[in-house]
Every structure is written in C-alpha cells, then in structure tokens.
Image (cartoon, rainbow, N blue to C red):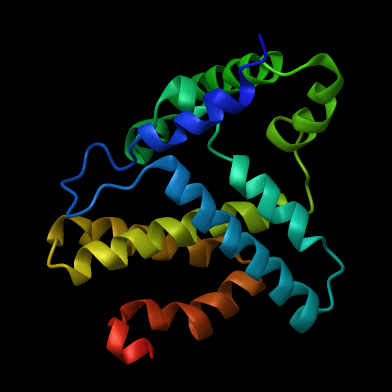
Length: 190
C-alpha cells in the first residue's frame, strides 16, 4: 500500500497555534500553501532585486512540504519546541523519523524524488523557506490582532523580531513593501 498522498491529505486536520485562543483556526495545509507562495515571492525578489540565481519553483515546493511531518508528530508550539536545546534536538530527531516514515509510504521508485523535498536540505533555499514560514506566522498574528485578539500581540512582536534577526534582504524587502497590505480591509485592498 502506498499511502503517502493519502497521509498528506490529512494536513488539513492538524491545527496550528494550539496554545493560543484563535478567532479562526489555521491548519498546516493552509499554512503550507501560504508559506509556499511567500517562499516563491522571496526567491523572486532575491533574483530580480538582488541578483541571485535561485529556483523559486523549488523553494515553493519545499515550502509546501515543510510541515508534512507534523501529520505524524502534530504541531509543537514554538515556545515548547524551542524552550531549551534538549527539547529542540529531540524534536528534530522525532521529525527525522516522521520524515522517513512518510517517505516509506511511497513506491520505491519515487522515494528519492520526495526525499530531496522532505528530508534533504537545500542550503541555498533553506533561509528563504524559513523566512516564508515566519512571515506566514506573522500574517496569522496580524489577522488575529486585527480581529481584536490581543493574545497574539506578543507572538506578533517576537515573530517580527525573529524575521528581522534572519538578516535576509529579500525578507526585509517583503516586510517593508508587501507586508503592510495585510493590515488593510478588503475594500482598501481593491
């Protein structure tokens, strides 16, 4: 039985922000699509504005799958995951096992292709996917705060600081030129 894709379809059942009071729940499927869109944009910004020669399509695909292991592990809240190095390192090992388990659900001739996406790291694109992941989290915080949910204020501040701390010029451009529109209403966007 090759159940890889059936398992991936379960991403929609894994909610994010489990420790937070949400006005609207967000699952890892929604988050992964948004992260893919943003990663694609970041790499395009890097290529067009900063002279890089990276593959935005590959960045988007890596971002689509970046949380796939959470189908098996669940979403570990950031404050818990990074509470101390021992927890962080243990969770990385759990994620590695989950990644191998997912890959084992594929026909053998496809395992290499998906290992390159799910398990193997692409050092050139990794910073862009990481930044996209954090920007997606920031967008969630902005949406919650806009809806009056003060529970997300601290998360918003710490996520903004984390993005700034990445030192990724393409992310800085996204933050200054593209992120402000996320504060607008639908009528204002038009």
